[in-house]
Amino acid sequence: MAALLVGVCLLFMQLHMTICRPALSEKNYMSAFPLVNDEEIKKTSFKNVSHPNGTSQFLPHILIIGVRKGGTRALLEMLSLHSHISAAESEIHFFDLEDQYKRGLEWYLDQMPFSYPHQLTVEKTPAYFTSDVVPERVYNMNSTIRLLLILRDPIERVLSDYTQVFYNHKQKNKSYPAVEDLLLKNDELNTDYKAINRSLYHIFMENWLKYFPLKNIYIVDGDRLIKDPFPEMQKVERFLNLSPQINMSNFYFNKTKGFYCLRDSGRDRCLHESKGRAHPQIKPFLLGKLRDYFHEPNKKFFELVGQTFDWL
Image 1 (cartoon, rainbow, N blue to C red):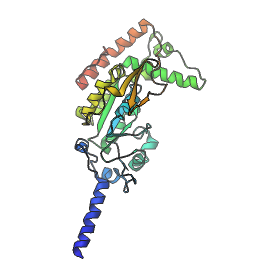
Image 2: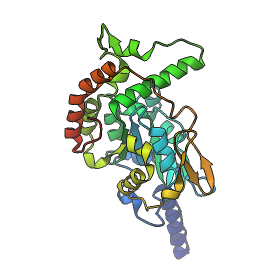
Image 3: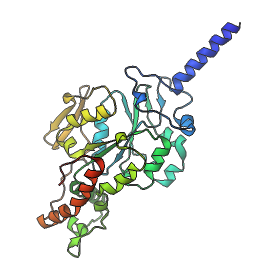
């Protein structure tokens, strides 16, 4: 009788461990991504009961933290080609919006997709990168989380930012100023324009590096991801310690849209029509002002992260 009770207890413990600390099938991915770093996370990292098909909800192992109009949606879609990735579909804005953050980690966990034990959960919200409060909040959730930051040429990002807002107004039959009217003030560059401030990457990066070492952050070259996505995604796979699954056949260039689309298991899909819109043309003298303005901030960013990009 005693032996039977011991056996039942061991079976119960084994089931409980399967739910709360799942084992991986191919590689010990979780060793590179510790799921918890304090008691609060341990309480909220997993559901008490798994879904009947063996899936559970996990707090994210990976965050795509920005930058706005840097290519975060493209990065998420490309990363989702990997079978070991489970991605939250929408931007949750948990860490940057006070009303969301006050709901707590249990609510955040409820926003995550159901995934299998061998998968890594990823969430992306571009506004995280430029928020003053987000780095500390993410650190308090999980100090060892992996962060993906995708950046573009700051000038291209400014124009893309303007383009998105312009079309948002157009869809609502609202007028919006011409790009020159926002970029210039008294014939000088309008450095109060929010789109320009968002492109001062070094300011925001300094805040993140107060909490996370560079080894926890991988900077994806958004310009190269657009032109030649496969090599960039290979680097992302290596950073995340994922088995190499994404390959050249997953990408094909759509001449009509003018950018790469995805092919997965024989199914072709492109990003939303709002992606890849043509940017407004600006006059050479204004382009020169933007280049002069971003020259020093770009150099500071390069020094900060120990790598360079084709922005100068």
